[in-house]
Length: 158
Image (cartoon, rainbow, N blue to C red; front, side, top):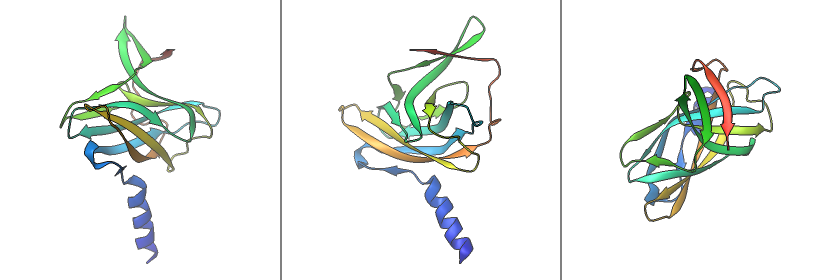
């Protein structure tokens, strides 16, 4: 019985809920990189697929004072990061948020992100009709060393 309770809790922690059905957005494999005790920023990563053309226009989390959608790009052999106002979600195509690419940046963290925990995220999706819907995500916290891209310059351009 105890295993069943733990299995149910684990399944609930990774389940994605969509509120308005018209968005038809799914999120696969959401995770957040763990932090050290004084670290004030980390990234959230996942795959987002929308049944119709849509845009990720905002992200929120109670664990961070500031949450932004970011992109990383190479400029003269230096990896640069900047906030973007939206991320296109083409119909039927998985958009991968990953280290070294698009990601959700969690800044002004209110607590340390410890491996094995979960982080609640709210993704705000806007359809072609300008209607917004939210997707609630529980992202697992993975080790600090998970998929770290080489040669990163964390210059935030705002």
